[in-house]
Length: 345
Ligand SMILES: [Zn+2]
Ligand SMILES: [Zn+2]
Image (cartoon, rainbow, N blue to C red):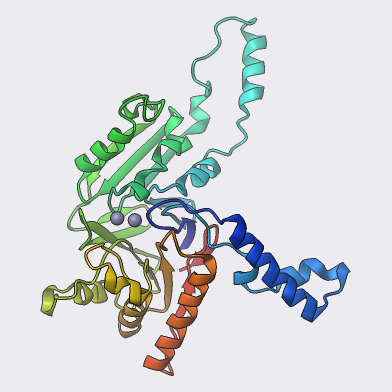
């Protein structure tokens, strides 16, 4: 499987600020002054700089794409889904050329209402899983370009299909919120309850686990070709939980020996102690659980919108140090989920 991160921030989109870009430039220039790269090899110099100097973590809210061959699953519709939608609809269709051709062929009468006159070539059959419907996980949906194609079928799954329909309809319920009402989008959209026994879509076998979060959240375990991916965002280990019903125990069984585990790590450990009941996790606690569960690759995800990229790289360093203290011989890889990056499961 290939996983692409289209949006990794939590709560609200948080694009890099001018100050953060300037800080990064200054850091990179300091390294350049030390290394004194050959001007003709400046591109290689940049390519070899660490992510914290040349990359941004990204500012879009959650959206993941999971691919196996030609099959695709989408998880959540934060603002990251806009760029994914553009990629999915970026075929050789050229609306300007189509309109010119139509004008010529129809001798300038009766302009088409639909910008997609040739529907048969534009069919997309898509599956979208929702962890839950907090706004940061649905706010990109009205900008998901495939829903404006008559040839698109979209199957949507979550804890409660009807509730998802109501949430998506609400944000497209009146033109004072968005110009196109959900009931008027041309795609064929179906809403389903995620079945308790699990779901098979193409090559993907999917299970879910309910997690504690205001309003609830679903984690997904996706298996394909002998590999296992677990995505768990927007959940919290409640301080008073214990025993077989504790979130930690249930989730640690769910992620047992996973090849890749992508998890909510919104707050630093210190801040998480002041945000009990807010429904989010911290990287040290989650990394410890992942380590004990034998996870091979752990990715931090759903970052607090007020945390700078620099702070997130510091959180990664602390998580690496912490797990090395817990077990000097462990082999779990730990990384930040970075917008636009693909990982292999
Ligand atoms: Zn969220
Ligand atoms: Zn949430």
